[in-house]
Length: 326
Image (cartoon, rainbow, N blue to C red):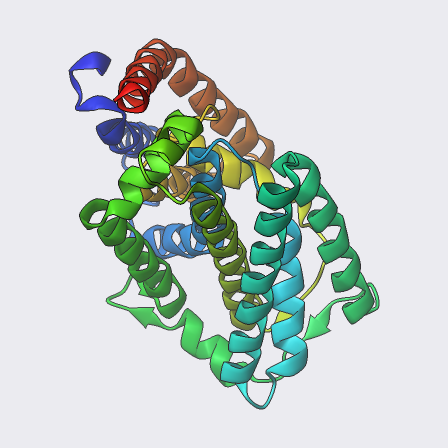
């Protein structure tokens, strides 16, 4: 049945639906999973990881990997808390500017010096985490503007929060740009065959820098929204971010080999992880079960999707080489 779905674009939604149905069956008649409280918790979790997943996923589409999103996620939250107590918008825009500039700098280093993105962004990760520890003096920073925290966590329609709505709007915008402009095709082309994409007129270096800038922006926005909503910022626990972000992107149809994926698929992948986490908590599963389940789902998708994705990448690269020959 897997192959009858519409390629990799529909599969993330099939996985999401399967997880929801499975958790509903496990919950039985208790009604804890299929409740407004669990839906709200799920969308809060989605808001936390989805934007980081989006930025990381786009770098994976072009056959790169941005490890620095973890450090930027934590550093941006600390910057916003320190600078935005009295003027939250200033803290937000300042942190976003830092994320954008950091992404541009890393992208520039990668394309101009022809360095591996993993090495460059690993350096960025360590620098950003170090700066976060310096800014916070290795402690948790309180955010005294509780009005902002209450606003971001306020329920809208019973299950949404302002923070969750921001993430959904961001994904909708990214999906629209990806679907209705040349940008989406160019990203897929770079991931499939960079040399062929360059020959057909794609500004490869500029686009790579832009994607790393967008990745930094997404990580910064996610960190600011979380810190504001929790009314605190801390550089601790950042290692818990990269695994869900990468897993969400892969569940969303993004290949580590590049040339595959869509923003809506990434959203479905991130939502799948959020559903698993909130659903397992709702049915009373021990915390370690979440990691086991996430790993099992990810492995299953990789096994089922591998042959189809391999064929798709071969076809994409053949198309790119034909374009190069033309």
